[in-house]
Length: 164
Image (tube, rainbow, N blue to C red; front, side, top):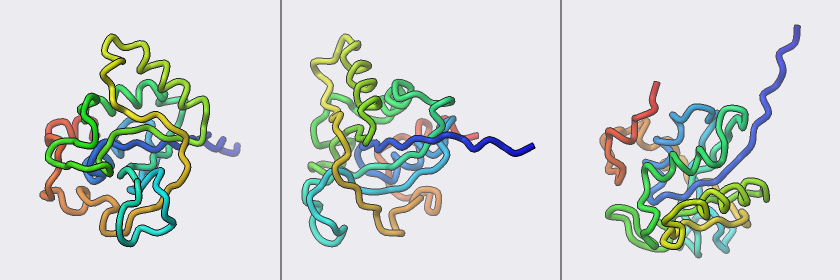
């Protein structure tokens, strides 16, 4: 009997320095694949300046195992949702927080979840359509998997909380 292919979806999550965000997200239940990159900038190259990009992680996931609302709950474990252009010691526009997608459904679910919170007026998380995405260089892919002693703004106890 043939195996049914798993239906997957993609979401792009920004939570400060992408090394820790990718390492955290890769271990979440329902996440199939991650990739470090940059979202919603203006250039077509990763060389030079960031040109408005947010460091992000592209996550391919099984929507039967992981909802957008649950993704946000996980993301809020590793970010300061009130901070603008800063996470931990990392400061600058590229370290802003956000959720980006080609799916209007994803964006509506994210906005509804944020609006349902008592602190919604203080939340600085961008919820925007993905307009541009560039994959980061190989040196940034799976960085903390390859070198777990590299610096990270996410505490180690949180970083590996969902690692099986």
